[in-house]
Image (tube, rainbow, N blue to C red; front, side):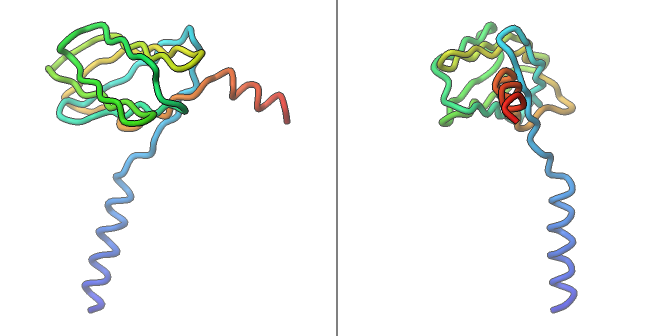
Length: 123
């Protein structure tokens, strides 16, 4: 019984150690963020509100799926490269997408850099 509990605890700690944390990107309208998408996996771009429109430069190189306020981006071919522009009410975020067979971003929280600055000024 003790050994089973120890194995479960060790497995849980191992899983927690390799689970990457989400990264937060604070962006302006003029910024272009580089996003690496691992082939065979999805990268999630999480926005504060649901995107109203998405423009993908290269057709048939990346797949884009809407899930509420998130976009799931997947590379359809090796070495894919494209730009992506995401429109939210009153905002625009631009991305430079590239596919990789080695590693990629998993979850990116996209936030408005101007709102971050305004919050700091209020304090």
